[in-house]
Image (cartoon, rainbow, N blue to C red):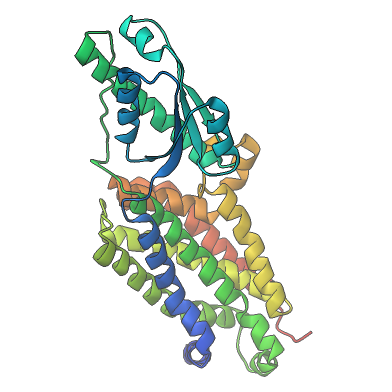
Length: 366
């Protein structure tokens, strides 16, 4: 036990003597959280669009005002022709052009079916989808206003939310940010630990002492856990205290699931470190493991929308289970008991990575 404690102290001292590493460990998570909170925590900007009003009636102007009433839009240009509106989209001046055809107002007043033409910039798929959905909502609001004024038919859709009343953009992004900070940073940090000692020739001095392989792995896991858990607590506190992130579940439950992912990431990093010959190889391997996590764990789109083959890959990624559990606790108010499946998966993978790292570690210098 004394030898293990000495190894832990040694690794902590090595970290403290490396100012660049300490800056990355302590400052990078905080900076990332601040940048995300600053960029996504506010009200947000508006998408510039163009309007082509070929009808030029009071009804068409009411529709334009309904569009302006949507916070997502900013009418940047009023074009006189379809071609001019489409040209604005093609050259990137606006993301969309809404064309109101001639006779639009007259058909509305007669209760006839009419249409709008929406020209979208498909090179920005996310914005195109957002504009499309927002236009549908704006047209619905316009129909309700027309029905009140002129007595025409309209259907009102009543919106009701659960786990609300509202989830902000920042709160939606917090699970993703914490996933990056608790997975990529610790994994890449500890991945270079053993390979760095190999390059500095200190590993040779270590293995000639009467120390077991498990002691080497445990000492590094303990040392890096102490540093990164303190960093995790500070990052979570900043998100809640300074950026008003609401935790609907228990804060201790969030810390528990975060600590579990942190341990899983560290053990995976240890496995990478034990199998790597140098620091560059270890760091590149850590990035290689993180890429599928970023693509297939629910970062950008729900896993349920991916192909069935890719969903099988998702089921073996630690980040997939963390995002599910963290989001459910943060946004839905679930407890750890409600997340037993995700907890079990993370525990199994953590133990598996730890055992594999001991088996892979070669107690010799090649």
